[in-house]
Image 1 (cartoon, rainbow, N blue to C red):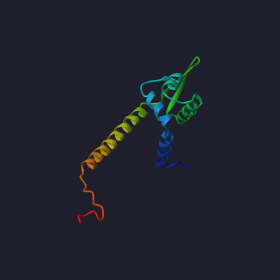
Image 2: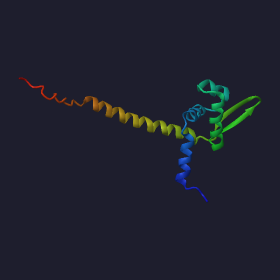
Image 3: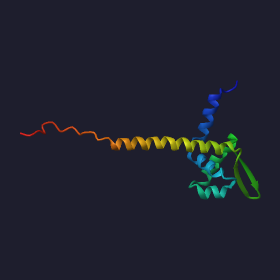
Image 4: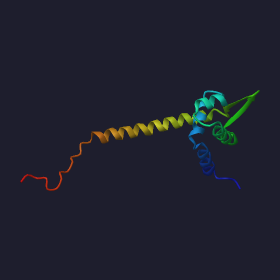
Length: 121
Protein backbone atom coordinates (compact mmCIF):
# COMPACT_ATOMS: atom_id res chain seq x y z
CA UNK A 1 0.00 0.00 0.00
CA UNK A 2 1.39 3.38 -1.02
CA UNK A 3 1.75 6.17 1.54
CA UNK A 4 -0.33 9.27 0.69
CA UNK A 5 1.76 12.20 -0.52
CA UNK A 6 0.78 14.41 2.43
CA UNK A 7 2.00 11.71 4.82
CA UNK A 8 5.29 11.35 2.95
CA UNK A 9 5.75 15.13 3.13
CA UNK A 10 5.01 15.12 6.87
CA UNK A 11 7.61 12.38 7.40
CA UNK A 12 10.12 14.37 5.34
CA UNK A 13 9.59 17.51 7.43
CA UNK A 14 9.70 15.45 10.64
CA UNK A 15 13.09 14.12 9.50
CA UNK A 16 14.24 17.74 9.16
CA UNK A 17 12.85 18.57 12.60
CA UNK A 18 16.10 18.55 14.56
CA UNK A 19 18.36 21.60 15.00
CA UNK A 20 21.56 19.62 14.41
CA UNK A 21 20.25 18.19 11.14
CA UNK A 22 19.28 21.66 9.94
CA UNK A 23 22.72 23.01 10.91
CA UNK A 24 24.44 20.15 9.05
CA UNK A 25 22.37 20.88 5.94
CA UNK A 26 23.20 24.59 6.19
CA UNK A 27 26.91 23.79 6.35
CA UNK A 28 26.67 21.35 3.43
CA UNK A 29 24.88 23.75 1.11
CA UNK A 30 28.25 25.35 0.26
CA UNK A 31 29.79 22.02 -0.74
CA UNK A 32 31.10 18.78 0.78
CA UNK A 33 32.40 18.99 4.36
CA UNK A 34 34.58 16.49 6.26
CA UNK A 35 33.09 15.17 9.51
CA UNK A 36 35.94 16.76 11.52
CA UNK A 37 34.92 20.19 10.17
CA UNK A 38 31.26 19.54 10.97
CA UNK A 39 32.31 18.68 14.53
CA UNK A 40 34.34 21.90 14.75
CA UNK A 41 31.36 23.99 13.57
CA UNK A 42 28.67 22.25 15.63
CA UNK A 43 29.02 22.03 19.40
CA UNK A 44 27.98 18.38 19.77
CA UNK A 45 29.44 15.06 20.84
CA UNK A 46 30.82 12.96 17.96
CA UNK A 47 28.36 10.12 18.70
CA UNK A 48 25.39 12.52 18.55
CA UNK A 49 26.60 13.99 15.25
CA UNK A 50 27.04 10.48 13.91
CA UNK A 51 23.42 9.64 14.82
CA UNK A 52 22.09 12.76 13.10
CA UNK A 53 24.22 12.15 10.00
CA UNK A 54 22.89 8.58 9.86
CA UNK A 55 19.29 9.89 9.86
CA UNK A 56 20.10 12.27 7.00
CA UNK A 57 21.96 9.55 5.09
CA UNK A 58 19.13 7.00 5.49
CA UNK A 59 16.64 9.56 4.23
CA UNK A 60 18.77 10.03 1.11
CA UNK A 61 19.17 13.76 1.66
CA UNK A 62 22.96 13.54 2.14
CA UNK A 63 25.66 11.19 0.89
CA UNK A 64 28.93 10.22 2.51
CA UNK A 65 32.23 9.93 0.67
CA UNK A 66 35.19 8.09 2.19
CA UNK A 67 38.68 9.11 1.11
CA UNK A 68 41.20 7.14 3.15
CA UNK A 69 40.42 7.85 6.80
CA UNK A 70 38.44 11.01 6.01
CA UNK A 71 34.65 10.85 5.69
CA UNK A 72 33.06 13.77 3.92
CA UNK A 73 29.35 14.54 3.64
CA UNK A 74 27.56 16.32 0.80
CA UNK A 75 23.99 17.16 -0.14
CA UNK A 76 22.47 14.55 -2.41
CA UNK A 77 20.92 17.28 -4.57
CA UNK A 78 20.65 21.03 -4.97
CA UNK A 79 16.97 21.12 -4.06
CA UNK A 80 17.83 20.87 -0.36
CA UNK A 81 19.80 24.12 -0.52
CA UNK A 82 16.80 25.75 -2.25
CA UNK A 83 14.51 24.44 0.50
CA UNK A 84 16.76 26.01 3.14
CA UNK A 85 16.74 29.32 1.25
CA UNK A 86 12.94 29.18 1.01
CA UNK A 87 12.71 28.49 4.77
CA UNK A 88 14.95 31.52 5.41
CA UNK A 89 12.72 33.73 3.24
CA UNK A 90 9.56 32.50 4.98
CA UNK A 91 11.04 33.02 8.45
CA UNK A 92 12.28 36.48 7.46
CA UNK A 93 8.76 37.45 6.36
CA UNK A 94 7.19 35.99 9.51
CA UNK A 95 9.63 37.73 11.81
CA UNK A 96 9.31 41.01 9.90
CA UNK A 97 5.54 40.79 10.38
CA UNK A 98 6.02 40.13 14.08
CA UNK A 99 8.38 43.09 14.49
CA UNK A 100 5.89 45.34 12.68
CA UNK A 101 3.13 44.15 15.03
CA UNK A 102 5.41 44.71 18.02
CA UNK A 103 6.19 48.25 16.81
CA UNK A 104 2.47 48.93 16.45
CA UNK A 105 1.81 47.61 19.94
CA UNK A 106 4.50 49.88 21.35
CA UNK A 107 3.05 52.93 19.58
CA UNK A 108 -0.51 52.48 20.79
CA UNK A 109 -1.16 54.79 23.71
CA UNK A 110 -3.73 52.96 25.82
CA UNK A 111 -5.00 54.98 28.78
CA UNK A 112 -4.45 53.24 32.10
CA UNK A 113 -7.65 53.16 34.20
CA UNK A 114 -7.34 54.88 37.54
CA UNK A 115 -7.61 52.84 40.69
CA UNK A 116 -11.02 52.75 42.40
CA UNK A 117 -11.37 55.36 45.10
CA UNK A 118 -8.52 57.35 43.66
CA UNK A 119 -10.64 60.49 43.22
CA UNK A 120 -10.30 63.84 45.01
CA UNK A 121 -12.06 64.34 48.36
